[in-house]
Image (tube, rainbow, N blue to C red):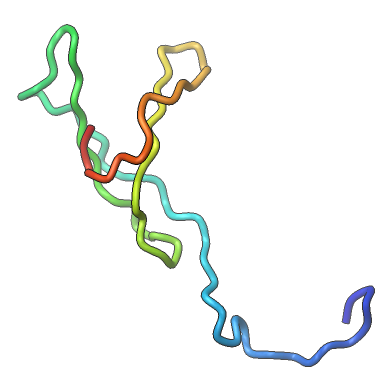
Length: 81
């Protein structure tokens, strides 16, 4: 029951695909074979849960210590950048 009145109770989802936010990536690591004074490459692995749907891409942000995150890349489909 809500402000609109009673409704028929259904099984959770009742055929709908219920999704949640995916967990953040894990195991962020520097790739020392590529990283230099001017280039950095890092790897990561998928989070423990995808939230119910495949993760199709990542958006990468960085912060240089000012607590202001800046978007570096979007639509990253690999587990490295």
